[in-house]
Image 1 (tube, rainbow, N blue to C red):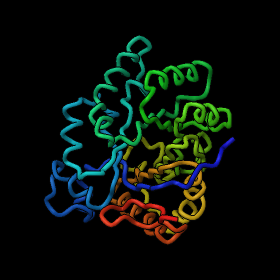
Image 2: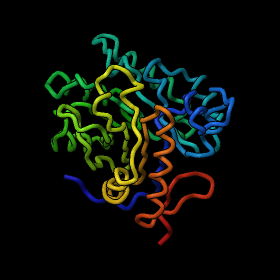
Image 3: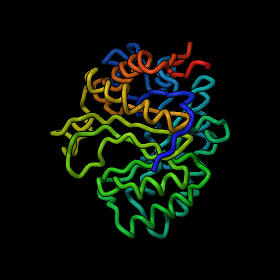
Length: 287
């Protein structure tokens, strides 16, 4: 089903969100750093971030423009789709919500700083005719945005689903999650020649369904756990997509930036990737 493409030109590694006060205590941010200056400090370590707040509230164009201007030239973003389009869908209102989202995210698109819109679907969104139809309509409504879909239920782990995404040039989000029976499994699948997308959520089996984000995402990856991705999965996907973005969502106690840096160190050692001088992006050397 998957076709090979030229090797990825770059792989960008970052974290899911950056405005965490506990990262000051963890030592990632200097003492006393307030939320208004966190992006400035974050961008010195990473070239890309995932915007979380757009899941909780509809993005507004002026706010998006102010945020992007705080980042240095070349910094990129992925933005979550708002929950009214994924988790709390109103059958009559969602097309209006999709139009509002497009308007709100426009400054990032216009500045060529938007790498992906993350369509994060909930665990209860199982593969059935009704949900398949809704997802198709939603992707149509968001056409011409760089889209990536994250499934949380195992019923979507199907070659037919992957082929449908490939036909649309929509990226499947590959996940690292606890080994629980109903979760979408860790796979190395690239469905878009433009982009592959990976999210590390941690493997906290006991905390995953606790109802507490502080427990769900409290996990520290070992070097051996990351090595399977850096040595096998990521190189496989890099053969099939022009760009790769990788985010760590295990934000509790500052594990995400720590693990992101560990993965970047492994990618430097594996497969001929070289690190850019001013950002932790990885580029193939010229042939």
